[in-house]
Length: 72
Image 1 (cartoon, rainbow, N blue to C red):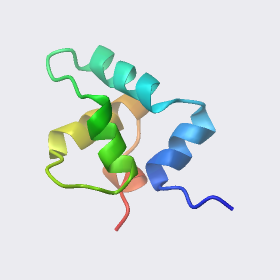
Image 2 (image 1 turned 90 degrees about the horizontal axis):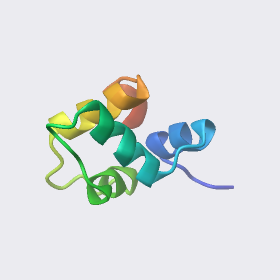
Image 3 (image 1 turned 60 degrees about the vertical axis):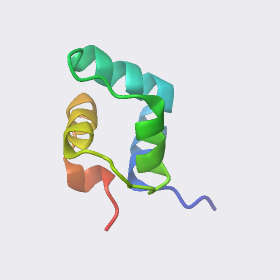
């Protein structure tokens, strides 16, 4: 059984790849783009230097709250 993070679960349920998520975020927030590395760091739970604004943009693109994608 896979042990997916919350964000991975949402992406899998919706059929969204990490690359597609980056495109969705950058289309929604063209003045504040994110990159694939940022998404990957959140998914792998390597949260070093991830800005809250990046998390909020991902949440906005997915229409979820930070609690829905972050592990505690």
